[in-house]
Length: 332
Ligand SMILES: O=P(O)(O)OC[C@H]1O[C@](O)(COP(=O)(O)O)[C@@H](O)[C@@H]1O
Ligand SMILES: [Mg+2]
Ligand SMILES: [Mg+2]
Image (cartoon, rainbow, N blue to C red; front, top):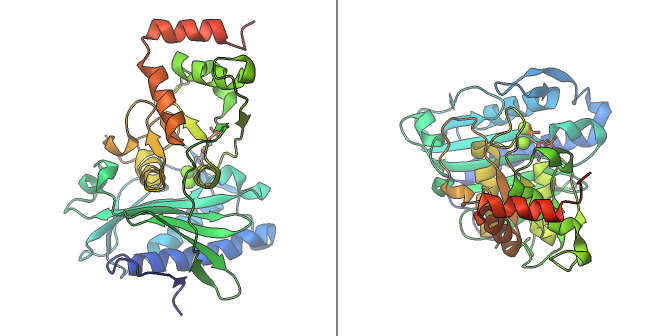
């Protein structure tokens, strides 16, 4: 039985890939739902090439996705968990970048985690294929393993949503789709890094925190799940803004998130859903990765908010610093 029940056809050449991704996501969803009954999924098993702690589920998810893509038209497979690009089928015409398991610090604590993917045409060289801007993506999306397991995907013509129906083991398309609302009052950022941020980011967050008493004359709420997929799903449904800026910590000059596996696929999806996705200063889809595992500062969500962050970056450095000095709520 097909693992997807779609209201309208999925592009012919992408359907085998999508079916394979859905089959694996269905199995992962069942495994994740069993929690500790399914084994020690959150156990540390080593480090990936970026030095990130790898959990058992990170490695398992990578293995099963790669295996399932054989014979689906994928030539090149680039995974956050692997150092180099793998060739799956020499005669494939497509390339897939994947964060097999996103939000892995949440595996053991029963909080939503996910899978992020982007699909583009394959060039003769695997590396050259992925070292292009996100403008080359044909499709991108995520699976969220939460109270519902869902697939949210774009094929470049708006956004589609499928909910995993456990009764039929089928990802069933919904009539309504998440579209980033034009106004909202939530922001998401890891505020524990406040002291490491640049002046424009501090000034933006200070103005949110100042609420009705500050220049925005409005109160804001804050959320931080530490699963990019979960933050994305919330913003797709309810609006708001997500920021993971570059900061002054060693190794975080370009933030934490990976352009190829996380930010370009999410950026494409968010734009298709009526939102905006940038590096803080320019469209993230225009950014060309200089290496497979390149990181990028990432800001996305409701257009008006994301544009405001860009305008704070446009201020001359002296002005942004003055804003921070005047408005900083964390001054001693
Ligand atoms: O722990 P931090 O610095 O707040 O970072 C959280 C971010 O890191 C991530 O967990 C990185 O993804 P992985 O779990 O795939 O490494 C994002 O999902 C999340 O937005
Ligand atoms: Mg991730
Ligand atoms: Mg990951």
